[in-house]
Image (tube, rainbow, N blue to C red):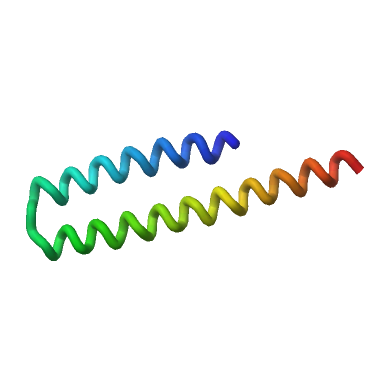
Length: 65
């Protein structure tokens, strides 16, 4: 659970920085690159969080047996 919280904070900070940078630079090609990287980051975060939660559930079920 700690990994999810720290990961969400890190993702939020990265998104705020890069999207703000893309807006301040203002060119379309850079904005497209930033948006695609941000989408990949968010996708990876959700997949990692899902795998981590699944792993925690398996540890709990194995320790209770």
